[in-house]
Amino acid sequence: DPNHLRVEDPGHVENNPVFTYLDAFSSKDMVNWTKMIRSMPHEDLEIKSQDGLTLRGKYYEHHKGAIIEILFHGYGGYSERDLSGGGERCFALGRSAILVDQRGAGHSDGHVVTFGVNERRDCVAWAKFVAEKFGPDTKIVITGVSMGAATVLMAAYPVRGLDINSSYLIYNLLNEQKEKGVCVIFVGEDLDV
Image (cartoon, rainbow, N blue to C red):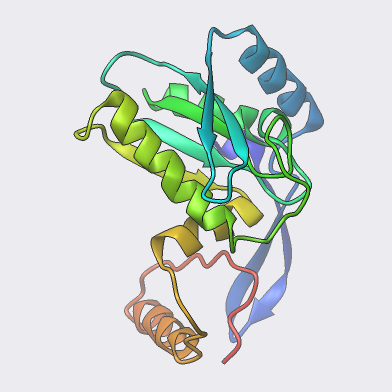
């Protein structure tokens, strides 16, 4: 939504403009989303993690048979604060939403955050839970913010090591597209090459 983006132009790199997106949403937006999500009917959900913790989330149904989006919050956060806007976005897209409190956060059990190591297994457990509860043909979208995004990526692409060559591949693919005149927007922490 362009009404929620403020852009700063700090300059150019190799004759290409560089933009930094700041304060994508105001605190007023966040307060309104939190009030909205608190007022919505929901179902409290619980699952057991692989290591025995009770993990909790809230299910907000848009309509029966809707795509279900499972949302994971970032480090130091919890679902209501960090994901209320995501819940609003899900409803705008016609999706149902499950706002998850990750282990050691919100209403879920645990005291240790493993930055995705155990959380990735929790993510898979939530997806299995949705398939069991709503049926194996249920369409599921899994998203995350900050550490939640790392959780989702680690669940989708489990690795036992670091693929240092992938950053070169990504860099080269982005440059190929740029040279073809395609608009490339890269949002990321780092792309060291």
